[in-house]
Image (cartoon, rainbow, N blue to C red; front, side):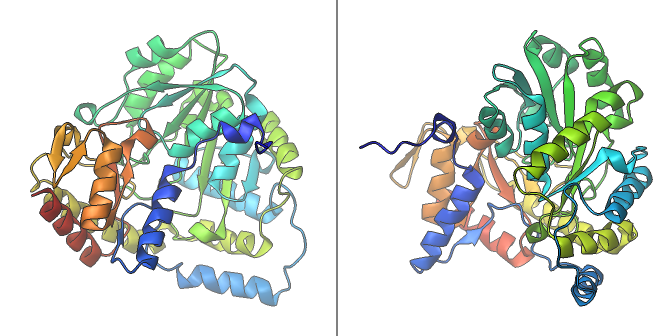
Length: 395
């Protein structure tokens, strides 16, 4: 008898980033020396001052259920952070704390999208955006870009993609997987298009905000005409090396925040109490306390770009933020290397996993099929060895 799984789960793709990480773990278990450059996870430990705050919370016996939308003093800290870093004025009633930014995004989609609604995804986009839209029985519409445009869409492309069914657009700057950062002027040009379509809501995913090099990110909600239609998503995973602590949060119009709290109350309820107490300390600390990690990421970025540019067939731009490079590898399509025919980025990514023992992620997963994503959230030694292996496998 066929397993009676729901159409909902059957229509849901497996996360390609997690699938590649699982494949790498399997190969390691077989004794292969795999270098993992597939996951977007800092290789730093959580800073000591944040760990100390968590230990103090344990000693103070924070062990009860927390409020569904987050502790009041954490929500105040989030408001302080938004004003300090983004010039955004939110009240605690507009804040919802969730189990990671991924849950924040899922909450927003669940409370705003109906079956048949359309969600615009400027490509490349994070793998879970399309899956979350699918779970809501909405349709996602990709707006393509390329390495030649630094993976940015134009106002003309945005206008052309909008239909009467368009309900949301997801922006992500600094971007995963490309590292692209939209400037204030570029966001304002896109906002000028959206001003003509008041039925469209904007999700601005700013989880990589503090990991920037030449350009400081600009918050979409800081555009006055967009504030009441924008939900700002952020969290602690990336910049604070707190991926496993699972703390994300939103700033949103109050009616959306209330709806997200209602949704979360029926799914997970409040976020981990100890992680929330530590999050207060993290958010209120000067951003300079995590600058050492950003500086190291910039050093690694410059190293990996230099090494990749030495490989014939790789087309590389310079990402301004996050900790990924997203090279175009389409020059290899149609070629046979070491007896293996390369037709797609997925073929290419699998080839370098099996031949070079380096795990990356295909650009197909991000809506940009000519590219692969390489994370440089790894040590300089691992980065140099990984690119050396890739170069040797391709030669």
